[in-house]
Picture 1: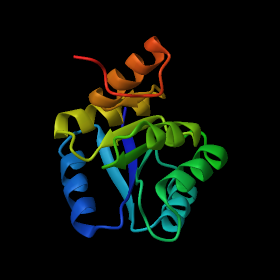
Picture 2 (picture 1 turned 45 degrees about the vertical axis):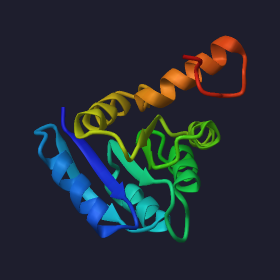
Picture 3 (picture 1 turned 90 degrees about the horizontal axis):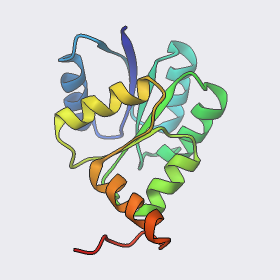
Length: 149
């Protein structure tokens, strides 16, 4: 199965690095790149990718609002939010907007590859530090604090 991907990040260097990483996998094909949320939506509309990878902070339309629009208008395209923000409020907001994945920018390449493969199959993926913390928060009924050591 070939997984087609649209990348959206307002930093050219980040997009180029992600493109190289993804194209290193035979099953992935980056079919479009955008520097803002509005252009990302147009690419999804035109190209119908399997996965859209969105930076959370972009000009014109941020990643959360872009995810909301893509999830509503193009439900076959799975969305991953790529972010440096590890707090629960950003993660919950992204998932509520329809994102199936939330990957921290501190992730290693193999984690990012796994995230794309997972959401391409319409399954949820969270960076491991996030999923552990959110699970702990749910188990103790708290508000998303750090797990006790």
